[in-house]
Amino acid sequence: MIISKFFSGCLELNISKQPIVGFTEFNIILKNNKYKNYFFDNIKSLVRYVLLEFYNGGVNSYNLFLYFKDESMFCKIIPRFITSPYFIGYKLAQVHTYEKMKNIKNEYLKFRRNDEE
Image 1: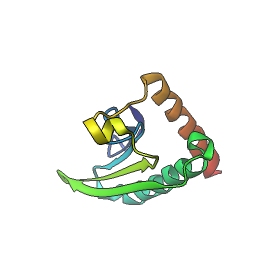
Image 2 (image 1 turned 60 degrees about the vertical axis):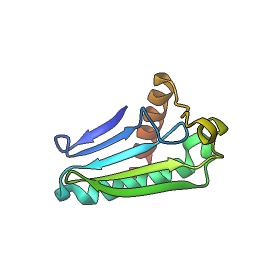
Image 3 (image 1 turned 120 degrees about the horizontal axis):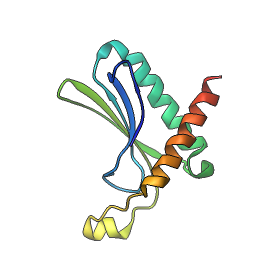
Image 4 (image 1 turned 90 degrees about the vertical axis):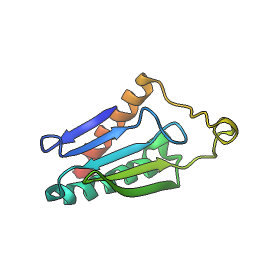
């Protein structure tokens, strides 16, 4: 689910519909290095959201992965929780409903607006 796109799609924030592990995985995709400062600003903002607001501030750890693919830079931010036995035993990822992802998206956008003030 796309949270927002900037600069004609050169920078995108989204919530994965197929997270690798856990319910929620945020992705930031940079397609043009000209906007790399915005890329890093959005990483900072999403990390602050995960630690301060996500699950009512109940997250105190996260994983952050940076990688390049097809001339784009990607960042995955994954809130850390105890890993589900379904995933460990069967590689069955649990995923939020579309409505829950919309709520997370709106909560983050509200947080970002307040954080920028």
